[in-house]
Length: 244
Figure 1 (cartoon, rainbow, N blue to C red):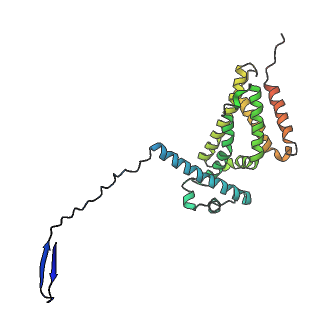
Figure 2 (figure 1 turned 120 degrees about the vertical axis):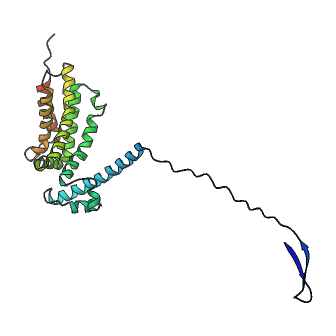
């Protein structure tokens, strides 16, 4: 750097001092770049599953509103999508067709029953107590979802082969829960030796009559329906105790 001084004549100047300046530019070090954690496969699947479950629940709720207004036969996919708050193309990412909606209605409604039957606390009593609890809970479930149960039963015949098979598989899976209770009772000598698969089907269907025959027996109090089923089912299943 040079320091100059101007004389009287501005055209003349003289240097009066010189200095050497060295400037050091320090560039701050960049912080290490930490790559974003890549989600594990399990987390990714969980997220996708959660999103799919949310979307399918939206579709279920939208379908229920439309079907309540127009019936299943007159319900359109466009109106169901609108009620669900989804576009039609987005809705088709989670269901394949109108038949799939009927199966969705069945599975969403049945989730609570499967959870109840698979609860360890539910199976903590005697076989007789467990069977009574199962009957009572299923009758309550029917009271909450009777119109959807009737819808599935009435429309199953019109389903395509794939969805019809899925409905039947769900029914069989649910019936197996009843069979477990009866088998336990037979093993403990509380129930008679019976064909447990056949009896499980009959007990399950007897309870379902609360929905299918509601037009005829709906005027009876719910508790009377439960008590009648308890008496009828247990009288046919309970083993006769030998006199000592």
